[in-house]
Structure formats: C-alpha cells, structure tokens
Image (cartoon, rainbow, N blue to C red; front, side):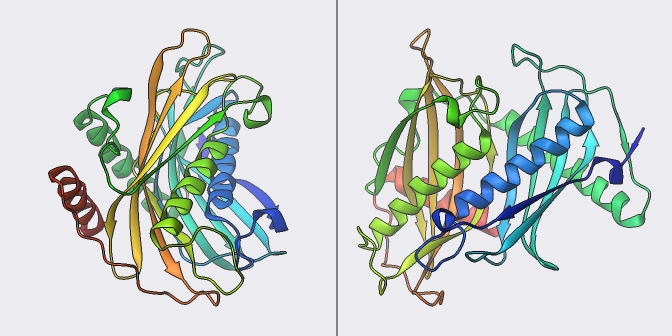
Length: 311
C-alpha cells in the first residue's frame, strides 16, 4: 500500500509572455493546463500506466500569477477505486497557494478502456486522513451527479437558443495530444477557457485589445465530466452561452462535442460552467452590464446557476 506522500508530483512552470493576458497575468486556461497535467502525472505515477482525466471540479482561482513568475503545481492521489483515482492539485507562487482543484483520473489500456489500478493509498498524518475523507465524499457526490445526468445528444446542446452565444471549431493535430493518439485534457480546458473568456469580453462590448480597456479573468470552473475521449484527427465543436450575470461576475455554460474522423459520428464530450470577473487594467473589479433572462430556457439556466452558486 502506498502512502499519500509517495504519490506526490511537483511540476515547475515559468509564466511566459504568450501565456499572459492584457494585465501581464497568466491566462486561466494555461493554469488549467498546468493543473490537469500535474494531476495526470500523479495518477500515472500511482497506476504505472496511461491515465485520462474523467472529471475536474472545485477549481478556485484565489490569486493570479504574473509574467516571469514560477508556478509550482503539487498533485497527490488521495483515493484509489478500481480503475479511478481522486487527485488533489494545488498551484502556488512562493509559499502562497493561488489555485486549488480536484480531479478524477482513470487508468486505461491501449484501447482507452478502464483497467484496474492495482494499488491503494493510506494517510499517515491527521491532515492526510482528513483529506482522504473529503476525497471520498467528493467521489460519492460525483457518482451521484453522473447518475442524475442524462446523455446529451449533439442536437440537444444546452447553449442552443441562448441570446448570447459563441462557437468555435478546432482540428486535433499531433501537437494537441499526449501521445499522438488522444487529445490532452489540458489543451481542451485551455481552448474552452479561451472561448468562454472571448464571449465574456464581447458581452462587455470589448472586441479588440487596448491597453486602457477592461478585461475578464477566470475565477472558477465546476462540474466538468468527460464522457468521450477526443482522438487525433477529430473535429471538436465548442459552444459557449451566458447563463447568469451578477454585479461583477458572469457564468458561462460551455458544451463540447466531437466528430469522429473515422465514423463521422458526433459524440458529446463534456459540459461545464466557467465563471469570470470583469476587471479594469489595474485588476480591480468592475460592474457588468445588466442581464435579464427572457425565454423559459434562459430562466431555467439562470436558476440553475443560482442554485450552483449557493451550494
């Protein structure tokens, strides 16, 4: 049996210019990639095989990282089921924790089918044992959520018919994969965040960059469940729609489908909530334009965002 301390992986990431926004801060999508990649390494260390990200939740951006900063991401496996592992990720700048997240990774074979991990994890300290209990609780909550979710057909995209909506289509080339076969979860999360951020900017009336303009920053990501792996050569369609606007923040629902390059069959990949905050060039929060849901579908998604925020 492994100790929690045996599962720890630390990655070191320097923030480069191309990874920063208009304030010189690390893009939220790049931070998500840092987290997903570190979590994958920790899960592979335990399983001694290939793993894929099955879900990502409770991503909280507490503070940003700036151009030239060195971001450490620590990932550790807290619980091992049959083929799945609960992984905790923390990004820090110096001694300060700036982002936290939890994810579920699954060990798969060469055909991307789940296989047993063959290991267990134990906690030695009180902090580790408490973290394990929380991980088990999160796992049980995720299982219940998955049971309550129905499979979404490509034609049933929940962002359809929203007034504020934006789409993007990408082709999965070799540079977007882990091993030349399956798309990197970190690359997908970055693409989703870029689309969501663009829609949030457009809602605020911002189309092109100016040094004196406002912007948006990612502050939270939740309820990401991956139902179908994206393979090399697939065409990925992402649709983002606004579901809720608060005083300074905005919630977007982002839906992802893939078109299989061999069968031409459309498959649902994931649907997730991204939350952004409007800020001025100095990083101070600014008020959002008012939004009032009008159609029954918009009201339903608005109420869902209110429930999700209040949990």
